[in-house]
Every structure is written in structure tokens, then in C-alpha cells.
Figure 1 (cartoon, one colour):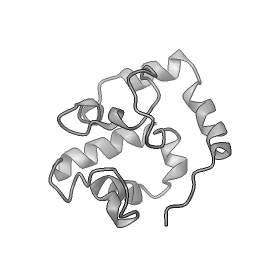
Figure 2 (cartoon, rainbow, N blue to C red):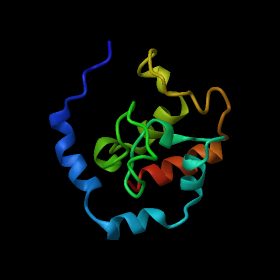
Figure 3 (cartoon, one colour):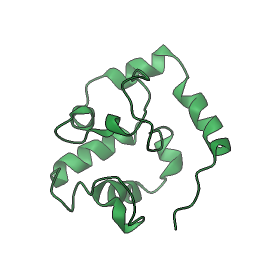
Figure 4 (tube, rainbow, N blue to C red):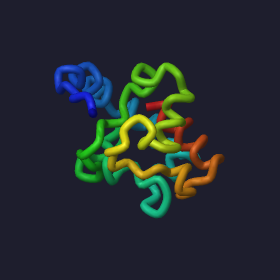
Length: 119
């Protein structure tokens, strides 16, 4: 059974998202993983996730925002496993198993995780 995600837990994380244009500019620097994450034929993370440096109307709202990822996933390998196949932790997830279904290559998954880990 999926654990409920409390909105109260989001308050400190949302503060990080609203930090200001300096942080948004950092995210806008082209990273290979960012290009994959934003590409609607590859990662397409914005279809479901909000993240710093993007306009609110661009991002989806059906999944948790991708903010404070180092705090949420201190073990980077767990974040990578989540991107590779989120159904392992939650069989009812709507997140595609990017690695298992070969939507992304192993190298592309590593690049996306590197990018997400900076958020």
C-alpha cells in the first residue's frame, strides 16, 4: 500500500523551490541529463513533476516535485533504482520503468539521475 504524502512535509521543500532567480539560473545551465529529462520523447519528467527552474504551467502535478533530492534520497543508488524501475517499490505507480522497458539507456539514466540529484 502506498504511504500518503503529507502536504506538511512539502512546506520546507517548496521553500527551496521558491528560493529565487539565482537558483533557477543554475538549473538552466545545460546539463545532458536535463536535456533528457525535459525531452518529451525520452525522460519527459515535466509531464508529471514540477522542479526548480521551470515555469509552473510547464510542469505536471501528478507526481512529487523534484526538489531537495539529496535530502530525499541520501543514497543516490536508491534514486537511480527509482528511475530505472519505480514499480519495484510501488507496483501501482504511474511512473514508467525507464530502464526495465529500455526507454532510456543505462548512460541516459545515469545522466538524468545526475541532473535530478542537483535539484
